[in-house]
Image (cartoon, helix red, strand yellow):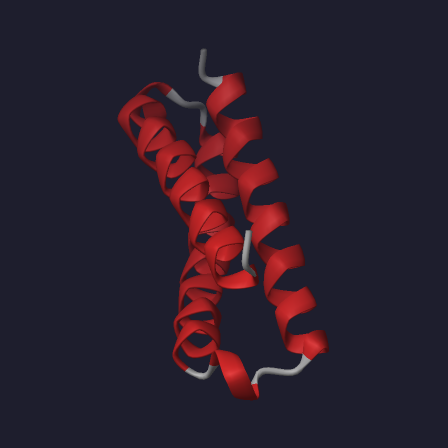
Length: 87
């Protein structure tokens, strides 16, 4: 699997977790809402970084790719945590 495919797959998984959490968010306590707001800011940064990486994939440094991947994994974990807390 190419790096671009891997990032796209990660992005889709994050989107799935995000969408599932959003549906249940209205039931959440205030502390979960604060956590959600923080993740949403990180989501926007990740999407902007991902768009740049996918657009300029050939010129992207290994460090930039690793940073984007780490941020994506952290986001996935954060949304998964919220989703699991809302079940």
